[in-house]
Image (cartoon, rainbow, N blue to C red; front, side, top):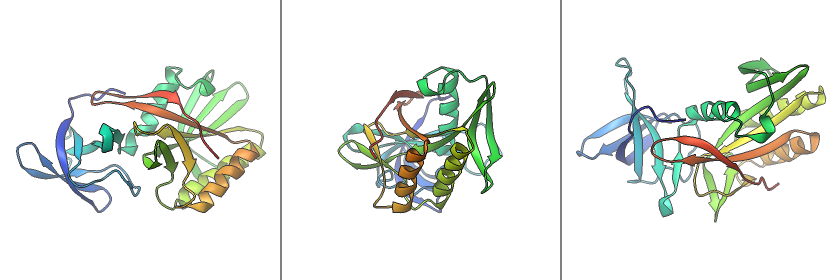
Length: 234
C-alpha cells in the first residue's frame, strides 16, 4: 500500500477520546487529528514523539488530518492506523505475499457468520473450500523484539476465536492472521498478562485446528507492505 501523498511530520502532544489526538506542526501550530485506533496503543503514544499525518481531500471532514505513523525508541516505526490493516492484507493476498493464502479464486469481505453473529474479515473460496480469515493489528511490544496481542482485554477478540473454532468443527479452514505493524518486533506471543482468557482461547484454537500466523509489515514514510512471516510462540 502506497501513501497517495507525502506524509506530514509533527510532534505528539496527547491522545484523548480514543479517536482524537493533538499534535504540533513544524510551524508551531497545534491541531487536532483523527486517530483510527480503538485500542489502548500501549507504548505507541509517548509525549513529544515524532508522528506522521495524512491529509484527506474530503473538505467535509471535521478533522482533515489522520495520524498514521509514530517513531519509537531506536528509530522504530509503528503504524497506528488500524483502518489500513485489512487493505494491506488484501493487497498481500492479491500479490501472493502470504504463501499460506494462495490459490483462492474468490474473496468476500466483512461477511456475517457464526453462532455469535460476527463479521469475518475475509472469506476466501475455491471450488468447495471455504477459508475464514480473521486479521488482527499488532503494535504492542513487551521486551527485546517480542510483540504481543491484545493490548487491552478484548472480548471481541475472544469471540472471534470461538467463531473460528466453530468453523473448524464444521469442516472449514480457519486462519488467525496477526499483522505486526511495528518494525522492532521479531516474534509474537499472546499477551497473557493483559488478557489471559484470550491467550487461553488462542492456544485452544490452535489445538483445535485453527491456523495461527504472524506476518510483519515493512513500514516507511512512503508505503506499508507485508514483508515476512515471524514466529508465534505459544
